Length: 264
Image (tube, one colour):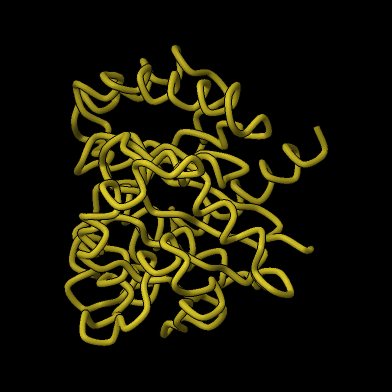
């Protein structure tokens, strides 16, 4: 059975760090350079779905249906306005998913099985999973299904706070459930070069995490912040803005890193 080339979970238990913005703009950038990409939105807030212009009334089949086995990955995937980019949208039904599957022995493996057992495989070169801002059962499902984890980290004073917990969770998943799981990388977001503290944070994170941190840094950018209200990724909303250009650079860096991870 064929599987997606690479499954990347975008996760950080802190909210407001640019996680969903990174997921949708990285996916768009990958699609723009010719990759076939699927976003799986497993955040009950559904911001990735909204940010890609998927109206709530149009989400007839969702990631909830995939996790409960009521729908297949292919059956739930919806095309977006971005050529080559599809999404399995999220609905508020996900708020109750933990209670529904909590007693199931395979509760952490629901998403992995859905992706692996898709009839004919899943026809995407990249699958990006957008997680809720917490280390809950949904995030654990995403990590159990993934090849690697990409961590957006905001350039603020408490940037490193909580990162160790996330990395410990990744290690626990690797040792107990998914031995192939790696850290794809840490991407620094919302960077303001005029802010001395932000520059210090970049230095501190690189000192602590070394080569795990991407060279590309995502700047704080008004156009990137505006784009979701128009139901568009920033790259479609304003290709020339600094944020969009940074996400295009990040996509190239992700692909280079994925090649190295696959060769290792």
